[in-house]
Figure 1 (tube, rainbow, N blue to C red):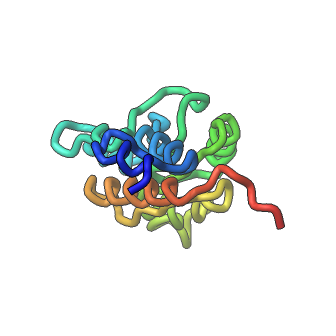
Figure 2: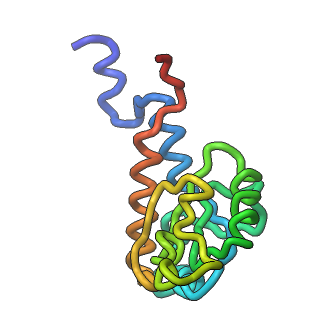
Length: 163
């Protein structure tokens, strides 16, 4: 046994990389933009209630885009609203994530074919990291989407890879 082996036997030292530590901190405190567009917002509110408690995942609602990490796009995105969503996304600090919630936000929903006023998916305006299907998706589906987003954050690296 070496000198270091004797010092670490008590189990009071944790050795990890800086990437792992920072990603753990970020995935444990994903702050969401507090706003909704249509009926999916009701399910987002239900997920925040005590029965499902979205805050146990570290997802805290905030009212300004400058303080959030995650933009939940919940509901029907009209063409008029698309420019506002883009503006909110641009105001968010890096790293930023988008969770598209519900059929309307994902692909236009029931309005995709004949709705001249509906955007056929929010990914035509901003990049989407996680899609949560449903009309509207149940709170359990939203929680699973958050877990998928946390997995994505866990695998990221802060060091830019040179080509």
